[in-house]
Image 1: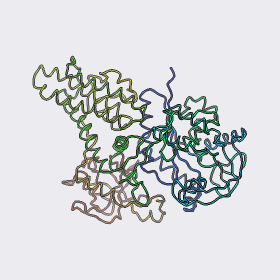
Image 2: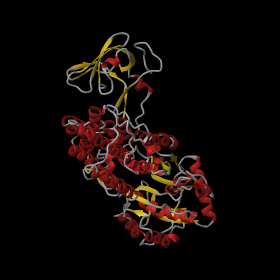
Image 3: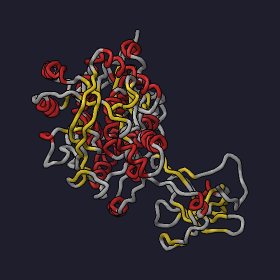
Image 4: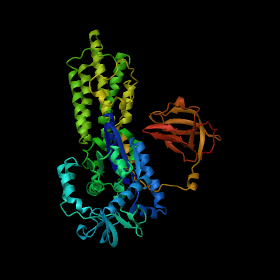
Length: 638
């Protein structure tokens, strides 16, 4: 039996800067739905990518004295790397500079031109370079661009136009007759308000004399395609030709996820383009809100841009994924706060979910020898837990249809709370005191663990790594994707007789002093790292050497520091390394590491450190840099 198909897209992100928390927000939101639909048994296609043409890219490349291609090749990689770090499960990554994309763009342009959907005309208007958009006199806000408030310039030139205006009434009817087409409802009303005014035809070209960086028009090589007409086609170019798209089963897309700032281009430009091409518009265009910081829009000049990689380093991937979708209803603006993030981590994840797992696995070891017991007959005290689980599962399924992420998580946490209350009311510690109680204890411990398994499946789309770790602690060897939502169709999917593993803290609490330190580090001014390349001469100033660890011991009163004695060939150095949460001192002796040998000595907790050990942080776990083959001591690393 063929699988039902599901297609979700993020916008393709414009590569004029490094990725920020807004990019991460949209992509995580799309990823959660994609993962959930896989759990429901769908064949999922999840697309993201980068928009790489246009005047802003060309200008940025000129400023850096590199070609536009060199510039986009560098910047698009940052998005790819961040998606890997954020555990994004995209099916493909499209770049608008790829041949597969450019080919379909040109084919569509030629087809529309042949059908007289595109025509040439002279044009005079006000042009905003940052927005890459023409405006009429009446559109201007005090003489400036109405979108970005920057200065505009008067331009008169010949260009090509798409007959977008002819589809105005069709689009209004489409929106009014389908309440799910544009969400949230407030955004739907915004688009209808925009369509109250006459819809003008869309200028879809730029003269090469002014902008050479773009896809040339197939019917006039002196012009390139307007960046939005080019970029929007990515959602179908990924599937091949128009015939391939129609045969793929993945169109129309189920969700076209965008930020509210690009809703008009998707709801109006994209929908009318598709109508002219002969394809249906997406089933849903969902425009979410923006993240602000202390009520202000993120801005490099204000130095308040929230950088996702920094958050991952401090808190771990799953904490960030959870916080962004729990804190604010999807669709509304939200104010980002590192304090609120730490609060969610401590209350929801550490004290509540993390504590539930820890206490359950520890009691399983204490009372059942670490083995999931076979439950006895259920009693009246069990019913509230099993009933609540069924209610939560049904409600979660419904809420995914609304993309109500924060409500989904609130609902799941009702089951977390109910399970904690169940343990407190049944009192396994008291049941273990009598023979009669020990029989009842088996059911209580089984139900507690089964509830955790249900929670693991439900939370997996939000926190994939943490929930797989939860399953391992419960002794469940089947992956969550293999279990799927089908495994929640009835209570009792947890296999009795499974061996639980030693409880591991999924979400360590951040205590007050540690929180103060983290907040101070995050508040420090950030350097613009858009061009962080260094010369070979600068790199050669760093002296990297191999060294063998001779001694290792934990630093007293420190959770993270280990004091090392490292032989670097010519001498033995004392080096402090923050690796105690990932390595035991006795396991380090004899290991070869790489140290920065010409780093100025510094004191940590009153102890001098004469170098730095190279390591990577993988979702909070420290991994020491090393070699395939054992080198000698003191060898220069280049």
